[in-house]
Amino acid sequence: MPTPENNAPLRDDGLVLIDAGAEFELYAGDITRTFPVTGQFSDAQRALYQVVLDAQVRAVSAVRPGATLADIHQGVVYDLTAGLIEVGLLEGDVQARIDTYRLDEQTPRPLTPGMVLTVEPGLYIPSDADIPDAYRGIGIRIEDNVVVTVDGHDVLTEDVPKQVAEIEALMAK
Image (cartoon, rainbow, N blue to C red; front, side):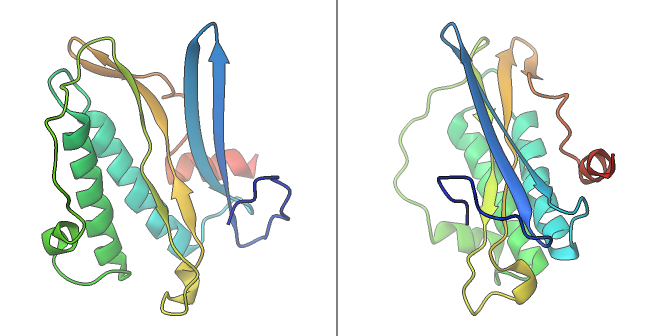
């Protein structure tokens, strides 16, 4: 688990999650990346990272005029739930698992050109005894800043690596 002091020793089998924000003349940005301490994801880390990445990429692609944050969020919830079922951390039907957590919904505001949002799905696996050892305590978040355009969206943070191969290549340098 992260510490507020950010001074915990890094473990060779661990991940580093950096959530970096900046503000300049009333403009704010925020980006998060997760990477392995040793430069190589373990099989379990890679599997969960890919679940989060797939959800994040799909969510970014859904950003466009007329879409709503609720729609985008619903897609992320579906993707993360399906991914957790696929890796074996959850069981059952995807929609049945999602319906367990559903509350009343309000009418969401549609996105319009010029709006800027962060798209930042994450998974935080507890260290409970019923979690397979390889997955215990893994936390992953991937966040980008996205502006809604007339034709869809632009990812303002697109030059920051987030694909597994890109991260491992960067870490190897």
